[in-house]
Amino acid sequence: MSSARPVGIDDLPIRDELRGKSPYGAPQLDVPVRLNTNENPYPLPEPLVERIAERVREAARTLNRYPDRDAVELRTELARYLTRTGKHPLEAANVWAANGSNEVLQQLLQTFGGPGRTAIGFEPSYSMHSLISRGTGTAWISGPRRDDFTIDVELAEKAIAENRPDVVFITSPNNPTGTAVEPETVLALYEAAQAAKPSMVVLDEAYVEFSHGDSLLPLLEGRPQLVVSRTMSKAFGAAGLRLGYLAADPAVVDAVQLVRLPYHLSAVTQATALAALEHTDTLLGYVDQLKQERDRVVAGLREAGYEVTTSDANFIQFGRFEDSHTVWQQILDRGVLVRDNGVPGWLRVTAGTPAENDAFLDAVRELKKEQR
Ligand code: PMP
Image (cartoon, rainbow, N blue to C red; front, side, top):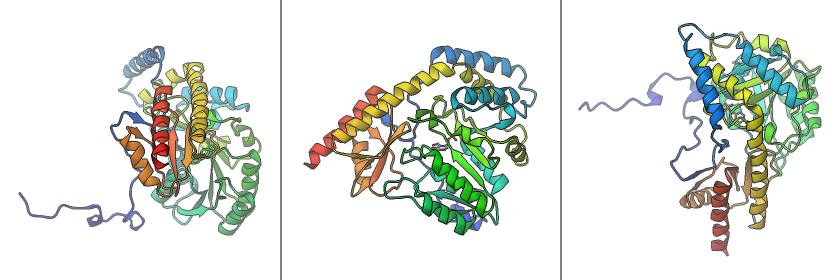
C-alpha cells in the first residue's frame, strides 16, 4: 500500500471562490418516512408509466441520432399547459426547457450573470440561487426579509437601488418558508430593478401549483426582463425526470441559446416529459389531495402547539425551537426525516401521503408531550 496522503479537494487547483465550500446536500437517508426534499409522495399512475414506456420505446429507435435540439414539441406542450392553467397565453417561443429548473437557473445566470456581475435574493430562500450564482462566478448579495419571512418592499427596493444587481431572484411560494409573494411586491421589485440597472428578474415558481392563489405568469405581459421559472419535479411528481422550464419574452429564450449545451435535453427526457404532460389532469388531481393534506398537517401542528408559517407550497415551515437541529434528530429518531434548512428556530416538513403525515404528526405530538 502506498503511504502517500490521499489527494483532497484543496490539493487541486480549484477556483478560489470554491475553496472551503460544501456542495448542495440534503441528506438521502434510508428511513421509513422521508419528508425532507419536497418531493411528491405519489408514484406516477400505472397508465402514465405505460405511456412513458411506449414513448421512450419510440424514442429509442432513433437514439443513434441527436435529439431535437430545440425541443419544439415539448416546448409547445409546456406552453399549452401554462396557457391553460396560468391564465396567460404563451407559445413555444416563450418557453425554454432544461434538465430541472436548476439547469434553467444556471443557464439564466450564465447568460445574465457571470464574473463582474451580481445577483440578489431575499433570504432565507432557495439555497441553490446563491450556489448557482457562485458556480457561475456571479457575486451573491443576500437581501433582507422581515421576521415573519415576508419581503419588506421598501427594504428590498433599497437593497436593489444600492447594489444595482444584474439578476434579482424572487421565489414564490418561497422555499423554505412556504409563503407566496404578492403580485404587487413582484411589480415593485421589477420596477426597482429596471430603475437601478436595468436587470433581469427571475420569479421562481417551482411550487406554484400548490398555492392558494394563481401563478403570476400574467405579469410577463409587457415585461421583457421578467422570467418565470417552473418545474415538473413537484406538481407533476417527476423529480427523477429532471425537467424544468421557463416562460418569458422570446428574446430571453433566444438569449439562453447562447449558453445552453447543444442537445442538452435527451430524447428520453423529452419523450418522458411529453408522456407526463398527456396526463396533466390526473397529476393535478394529486396536487389537490396534497394541498388538503398540507392544510391538515398545518392544523395538526398548530393544535399540537407549534408555530407554522403560512404555506402555499407542498411543505410547511414549523417551529420554534431553541435548538432546531436537536429537534430534527429527535424526529429522525422516530423514523421521520424532515429538513433543517439552517433557519434558526425552524424546520421544514414536506406534505406526504396521509400515512406519512400521520407518522410525522405522531412524532411531533410525542415530542411536545415529552417536553411537558
Ligand atoms: N426552485 C426551488 C424554489 C426549489 O425548491 C427547487 C427544488 N428543491 C428547484 C427550484 C429546483 O428543482 P428542479 O431542479 O428539480 O426543477
